[in-house]
Image 1 (tube, rainbow, N blue to C red):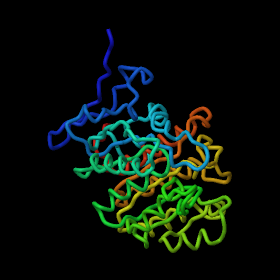
Image 2: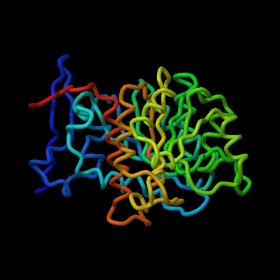
Image 3: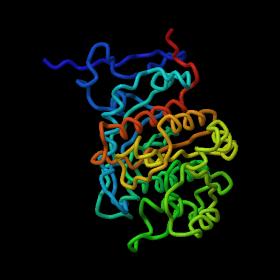
Image 4: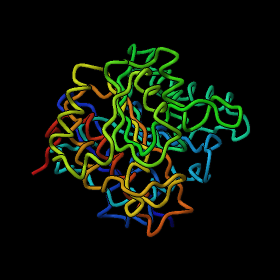
Length: 332
């Protein structure tokens, strides 16, 4: 007889019941269905306020493929996540209803069609104001996500953690690819040009013009080299000053981390951030108006001991924690 794991339940002050994670005191983590952090599927709750949505798509990559398998690997790596986030003093899964929305069925054969399917899927999932963390997939998915959010909120300020600018022009005759989502978004007026920035940029580029064109699109840059000379608290303040008072989208390409911390990605660049540095910076965004987020470019075929997927799972957890009321559902 198969035993179905039970969910931890929490009754809010208004009488509504929240389904949290599976009760891992009753069922071992490795025996439960592989939703993100053991959360309920979206069809198991009457409504949800925040969630994760997998976008298993990597037809926009320009080098190593494999990020289409990222969402499931991130979910597998999320099994050890627990209900209380000490660093943010939040219960991300009990403060409001969080659910796993599964994966979008995205064609790998047609970039334009894929973008339309992703846009429609995100629009449907957020039709009542829900917040999403997208699990990529390659960075192309940020473009349709920003299309949806800009339609709801107006121009969006993007904080983009990445080794690369992702504001490049066409590759191989295609304007749509993982190195162009923020160029496309800027050219379509989806971005707040006074509030966008890249963090962690490093490595070789095509020329100085890459950075001048990037500035014209509305981005400022905090290069990875700053982290060797500047206290991280100061870098955090620079980020928050740029984003304060704006609708913010957080986009995390896992290759912002040094390959020592994230080898499982398509375009690794030495000299990146540590997991601890990136987690700290994401937590520091908790008082901003974050309207959406993604964690992309996890390619499990190049990973070792799941370290890349583990980093992505914990970053997703921090992003979900941002949307939870501080201290809500505290259990002493």
